[in-house]
Image (cartoon, rainbow, N blue to C red; front, side, top):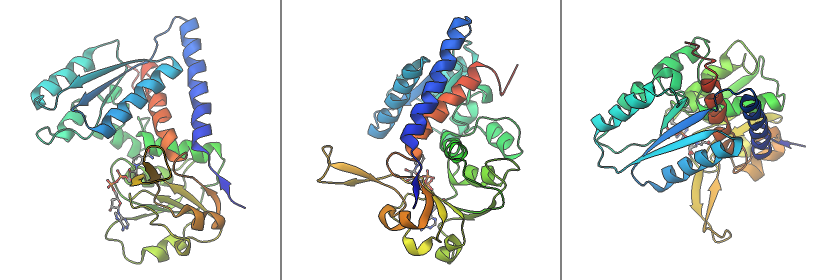
Length: 295
Ligand code: NAD
């Protein structure tokens, strides 16, 4: 019988823990964590993500500031704002919601954020520190997955982990983190991507599969061995006449078929997704405490 990894419940527990920390900080007269988000334009998904982050901040007692710009803002103006926030002692963490309009170089903006405030963990300094095992902000989705593995005490040492996807925000960091000499970690990791051949053969040899490719129901039962742990990162929005909104979310895993073969599996929705925002909150707490970058 498989066990569902309940990301929604775990995220609620982590939020309670963070809120308790904030209460302690308040009692001791310390600095309340403050997250700033820059939102450029009116992309529906970006608006929803930023609203979710704002709500999560207030739920745990953090301060949050959203700085909005029309998509006509120049790259120079945006970089100036980032520089101003970098110097603002009130703000502990800064995220720039992606994607940015085409005329703005995203990488340039990411690299303009001070690594000490880069709570998304996208700055090359944080990525590099993560790779060599130094304290760093780990990007929210991989950090959330590690937290789920840890809280469910899923064994990882010596296991063969197959990560499907090699993006900078999910697949690549996930593969590095799971091969680290620590727990969760110590896995033998195989990274698969769009040019991988004989993918099903590779996934069938996996003890742990992290599916992060963004193709609905891609991972089928024939691709999974009995007893595997399956982490589904994918989110694809499809039309549905069974929901009020007219939409539903599908993961990269064909859950009904695959789940009976697993020991543990994450559902979509309610698996990895809810953990992503709480990981951002945890990074912001670390930033307020100057834990990663003390000076
Ligand atoms: P991406 O498009 O940047 O990367 C997809 C990766 O999948 C690429 O590296 C590509 O090589 C690989 N890929 C594509 N087709 C493949 C195939 N047929 N076989 C093997 N590999 C293949 O996507 P991303 O940003 O990493 O996101 C992946 C999915 O995870 C998306 O559905 C996204 O919405 C979702 N996501 C969810 C969360 C969350 O909080 N739950 C966070 C980030 C991303």
